[in-house]
Image (cartoon, rainbow, N blue to C red; front, side, top):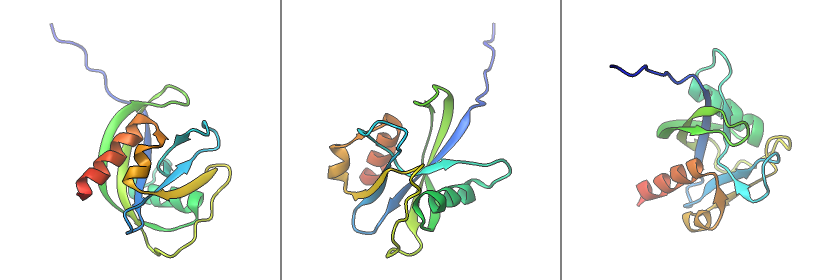
Length: 142
């Protein structure tokens, strides 16, 4: 007897690994989450929006900088921490169009942002799916 297929119909979360060219990536803290937890920047896709354009828009809205969205680094399903809904996480490698641009944080979305090295990331608390993407990014750079 065949088992019934169950198709994924969850939310899609897109995140960006933004490298500053100095061996550091940008991490953010969501004001709605614990002060102990760090994330990588990103957001959701609006209806009828192209995925890469959506991520570039989210970065511009939340951080005030323009990025070039590159290749997909990782793709995985996970349970969202906020509402325990199933979601698909797509993490892209991105670069700032102007490496000297200053961040302008949207306070409702981003409480804090900072550039960190791989070693610093190892000492910080991330949701596990972001931690896997960060480790993959830095291990691919070696």
